[in-house]
Structure formats: C-alpha cells, structure tokens
Image 1: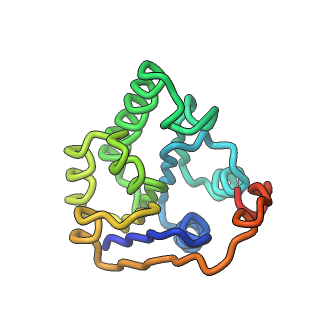
Image 2: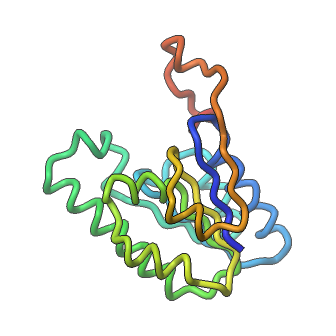
Length: 165
C-alpha cells in the first residue's frame, strides 16, 4: 500500500516516523529516506536504534535547495537518485520517502525512478511532501492532507530542535 501525507501543516514527517517505529517494533524491516535533509534531525538516532536503515543527503541541509549553486544542486540530485536506486534494490517491508513530493516538484529527483518506486508492490510505501502531487496522489491508497491553522513560525519563532526537527 502507498501512503501520501502532504500539506503545510506540521506532522507529516512525524506521522511517517511513527508508522516506521510501529513497523520496526512489529519486526518489519524498514528503510527511511530523507530528501533535502542531511540525517541530523532528532528522529534519526532512535530510528537507527530500532535497526531502521536511514539514507539521507549528505550535501543537503547546508541551505535551501533554491539557494544552492547549479553544481551544488546537481550534487544533491545525484545523491537523491543514488538513494532511490538503493531503495529500489531493497527488500524492506516498509519504505519511507520523506519529502519526496518536494524533491519531485523541484526536479531534484528523476521522475522515472519515482515511477519505479510507485510500482514497487512488495512493501508499505510512505511518501511526504508539502504540496499535492498528481503522480503521488494517483498512486496512493491513503492520501492525507495536513493543514496549518497556526504555527509559531508565523510569529517569527524559528524551528526548535526536538520539536520541529
């Protein structure tokens, strides 16, 4: 089954992490892939403790993708695609592709590799992103929109470690 969590509200990654924790705790093999993130957010170490394989973009996280030079963007895209190719070869029972929707929208991942992932029927696949995606929504069995009603960021409070990341 394919799950797609999207929207401007907080909780998409948290929901994906929660599903991954539940699956790992039930003995399922899991892979958690981060797009545009460098593997330093607070959920990563607990996932690794649960023997979840984590793949992140070592080059990402330094600044927003839109602010990177073309060479830096190319490096991020190459690493994203490399991570997707690795996941396509895995036999994990659950695969989380965190921020895949954004990577697809920003052309920071090969759409053909995404199509191959969506055709993978031997696992539970969880996808997150900020905006709706026709490709991801059409393939998904579960589609959940997260809507922001209020957020401290709107008042100028930056993201806090342990809460937002």
